[in-house]
Length: 201
Image 1 (cartoon, helix red, strand yellow):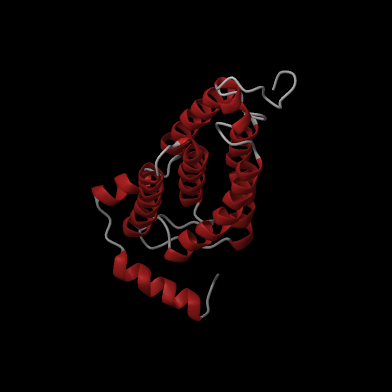
Image 2: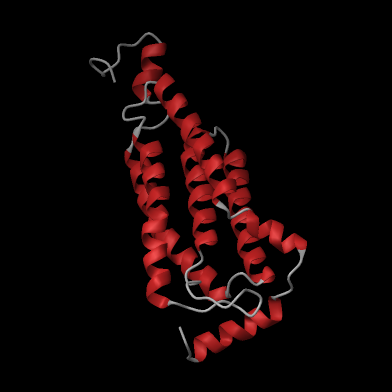
């Protein structure tokens, strides 16, 4: 990450965007662990309770997968930071380890995982669309704030987007293979038709 045409473009974009101010700092702070993790924890609890009450098979699997995913973020990000040892922008004290952006990764995984967990429980397409757009807006706001404040180069942000897209894809696969929030067998039982499920779920 010391040179090359892509890095030069990255630095030019950063110089054009950087303008440290209080607003950009507030946006960047949304990527803090203290901001993102409580949101994810609330989503984990909500989905676990709803799944358990609805009699969902393996209701614990999506929340557990999301929690494990969050725990894996530093396991991926920290070694990459040490390996690339990229210096920071002129707006931060001289140091290395800015690539990829840990704040961006935290934002993408916490808000993204919370959104993916909640989507199956929303009844209308409008609600699902609003939640997805809200998640995207928060992640973009964090990313913009980090670059605008000078905490990260733009490529640091893009690298975290790419890494977390792979991580969240794994969570999507787990959620898609788990039982739907309100299974057909549950609806048949509530209507008086015998359920095909035997024994406790």
